[in-house]
Image (cartoon, rainbow, N blue to C red; front, side, top):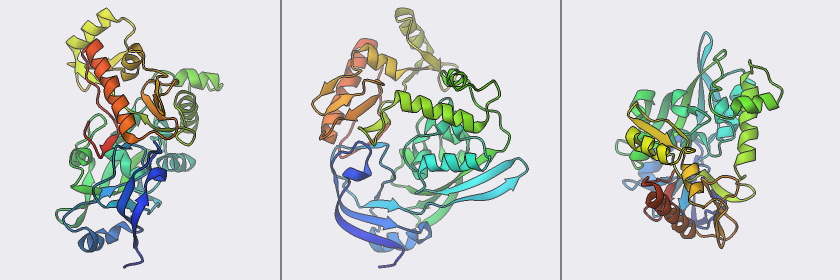
Length: 346
């Protein structure tokens, strides 16, 4: 076996997912150097692609993974190019996302500050097209480096080739086709801060910051908001927002808002659609703070399912299904999970 990777058998994954639920990998491969993937694939898994596991913050183990589990451990951050005020920062898939955000801010690069404190790794960011406080990561992505299973080649895909959509991407739609090995981000030394999302300006004001905050101050405001609103996975098991904000036809959204004036809505993926607040819909159905044994809904945010200790993935999935069913019955709106469900179907 090459020193560039290690194979382990019958490995517990409880400590490798932020829900903290028990699951076991029959076989786990830890890879130090992504450039070795073509050789490792030929030797270790052949035509049956592994399941790639990053920080485990965007998945729910409702059962054991059926495939070999792959972990990429490289965690380098480098400046790949500079063009005046613009820089391209390259980060390995194994870098912790928040560590990347803070590193770019420390070097004076703006663009990722609204995405501070999101759990998980860089490799997961383009798969889910993570987003928060008015920014989606695809806006900042320059290219994604991948290993393609079918061809056995290392490729570099520009942003347009990645098929990004709301909490979606080519990598999510075709999970067995690519392994994300690194991501390149295009950032700026002087970009204007994105302050339009509700709560950011108020938080900055509470911090005593005037109308011209720098990127570090915006990141601090986001961190304070997230810590106040969302439970810490290190304290109670969770995967952040469990449901996507549903996108519905504008006519349906308008009809719902006429009946429920307090329902928040935003522009969807075009003028003909609207994005609704999943948290509001769930809260209106009475789920916030609900608990079924060890599985529950956070009393701080209705979008967050929590493991109070000892819940199984199937118990959490059953709770999520019942929440979605109640929202559909009351409002006629379908909810979809953000995390990837392993070992069961939604």
